[in-house]
Amino acid sequence: MTMTPFTTVTLIDDPRGFATLWLNRPEKNNAFNAHMIRELILALDQVQANASLRFLLIRGHGRHFSAGADLNWMQQAADMDYNTNLDDARELAELMYNLARLKTPTLAVVQGAAFGGALGLISCCDMAIGAEDAQFCLSEVRIGLAPVVISPFVVQAIGERATRRYALTAERFDGVCAQKIGLLAECYPHAELESATRHWIDTLLLNSPQAMRTTKSLLREVGNGELSPSLRRQCESVIARIRSSAEGQEGLRAFLEKRKPLWQEQPDSKDSQS
Image (cartoon, rainbow, N blue to C red; front, top):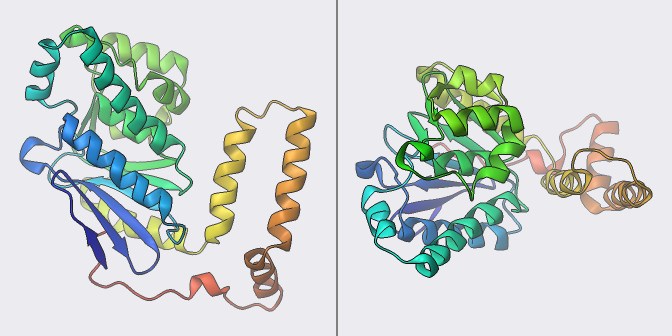
């Protein structure tokens, strides 16, 4: 296992072929500030550059996933002019767009509070699971702001109608509700979240790394599924390429020969922090 040094986040590679990106300001409930946003961008750049990674987990150390914006950072924003605030917004947007467009499949694991921009991180991930008692809130309107930068990703995750409700009321909702509206794929009792996370890791490790990346890329092109001649040609080309690839051939042969494919033969990681 290798660890990449940061001060507000921790990026840990697991020898089984995935990584965990931890928000690591537990004393501040993993609240965002400009420094954390920049370090998250740099960490995602490293993940993007590492083609050997099969997937990425995003988690928060301590009691909470993330309490949203850091109070000191918000105070600084209140004292900044328009252009400086615009630069700040562009940095946050870079984080969200980079996470949404990451080639590596992503899974968020949520406990405790996930407020404001934290919902953006969760919405940008391909999948998310959480504790039943986790608390979610688009709290911006309570302090005279709006969830502007994260809004496209939240709408994609939970739909227009639910986004209107929670962005305009700023009411809190729990993990059970988050699952009902599509923000979480599954929710679990708090005491079972770690074992559930291990199960998700084991499930993802069964899958072809190349096939997961290809599927993620394809689904980005498919979008809402609107049919077009160009999309048809794209799908035909993708399946032809993956069937004829080395990993695709290995998967087909393993299935026909009733054996495990090579990507399932991974080293155990008993000391993993993921």
